[in-house]
Amino acid sequence: MKSDKQIEVLAGVASCQRQARRNKWLYLPIALALSVGSLFSGSLALIAIALLYASDVVELLLSSVATRLTQRQEEDRVVLGYGRLEIATELAGCVAVALLSASVIYHGVMRLNSPHLAQGWIIVVLVSVLIGIELLVFSKPAPTSWRRRKIGTSPPLWSDRLAFLLPVLAGGVAILLLGSGRTDTIIAVLLSGALLWFALRGIGEALRSSLLGAPSNLDAADVVQQIISVEGVQDIHHLHFWRLPEQRLAIDAHVVVTVPNWPKAEAIRDHIEAILIHKFGVEHSTLEMETPDRELDSCHVYGT
Image 1 (cartoon, rainbow, N blue to C red):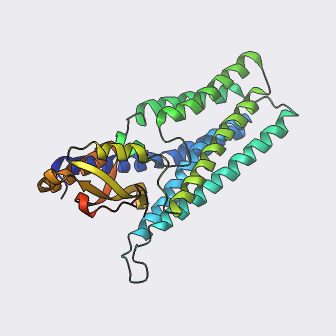
Image 2 (cartoon, rainbow, N blue to C red):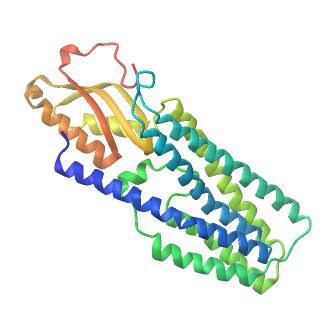
Image 3 (cartoon, rainbow, N blue to C red):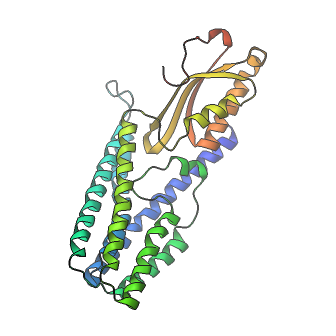
């Protein structure tokens, strides 16, 4: 049974997830405004930024559909439920972002041969307003336990999005002051390349999850070290990590408790579960407590 503190942490993470989903719906009008602005300004960089926000909207729409499907009850033929559908939709979203990013890069390279002078003042106004929105609305930090497990096709934190916006703002200022026709295109190609990298990383993460692999943002060695450092724990083996629906993490393991501390096995289990929740954001853990005489010599730390 989880302690009051553990329940409080999980409630905080759930609240942060709900707030993040609500914020993402604001990305839709932002993406539309950037798309319209790119048409009037002729800016390819604004299209790249619109793609950044649109990717989060697509991810939200697909995950909403997947969440509804995963809420269906397990059946005798689908004993683990429909949670893998979430990974399939995530993979589809990553592939879409990768293709669109590659398209922007292609058009940007083609435009370098025939430079086009974008309307710098439209870029400066739009991006300045957007930076203000980011600072006022999206700058609330997420709990560490949630940031550890966040997986997505685009930068998850508002500070990372600012890293995309500031070069576009600088490019708009450069266009106004210097009249450079290639500045906007070069920035668009670089930003689209970064988005393509995020999308490819998301594809790899989705494939890893589909194979029941440990999430890349979880340090398995650190988890083992934290568990073994608990007083009364002698060893750990048969450790498995995998991902549940809604990007929740799960762990199961056999924990070997020293003979003198065996009467405190339940308290040791509670301590380990608290560490997993607070330090790693692992909400679901199945720990089998054992005495040293039950441990097999051929057991491995990870896997079977």
